[in-house]
Amino acid sequence: MDFLFPLTAGLAAAAIVLGGIVEGYGYGLSLGTNWPYTRDIHVLALKGDPEAIHRIVATSIGILSLITMIIRPSFVAFVGFGLIIATALLGMATLYVLAGKLPSFLQGLHGIVAYTLFVTYLLASLGITDFQGYISFLINAITPPHVLYFVIFLGGWTTGARRMVNPIGNVRLPKGTVQWVWTFHGIFTLIFLASLIYLRLWLGLALALLEAAVGLWVYRSINRNPARPGISVGIHQLVSVTIALYLVLNALGYV
Image (cartoon, rainbow, N blue to C red; front, top):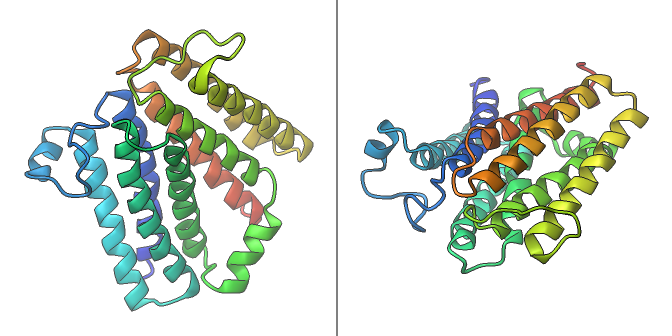
């Protein structure tokens, strides 16, 4: 059963990227606010609805997490299952954020929990399943991963604040929640870049610069077509997942 941890980590990464594709092609509320199930969801998934695929993948992660907790009980397995529950609850909250019924920062929290879920199962895949190893990693990997978390949180908050349908606008002097949150997203991106330079993590810096470039592409795409900014959002999430993967492997001495 050694494949369970890496499979769950891979699906968690896929769910993050799919979330970007959902936003990019305007499918955020394509299935309404009922989560995770909806009528004929498999039919919609086969027709290419990314939100349906996203929900099926998320449900699969939950099933795998439960199986792992039963078959291979460990501290990280229990943490992972708790994160699944938190991700599901915040996933439901995100739908209500898009519907304008809950505050937008909850979508930022959803992003943080989703990435923590990915990192948790990635660590388990690399053999860190006990309390001491897991906590030690969290304490010792203070920067830049924790700075990246602020970037992720503010990026998700920006998405929630614009409800996936409104533009960010031309940000010179920030006005309104969307522009202020997006501005702080940019500021923490610069702090993240500076931390990578300080630590001489050159591969991470290259990935982060690519991420910043894609982020500007996302910004332009959102302002051009707010409801359907396109593949740029999915690529943005893909590069973010790659950076998180790199930082974990680097912290453990693999790269």
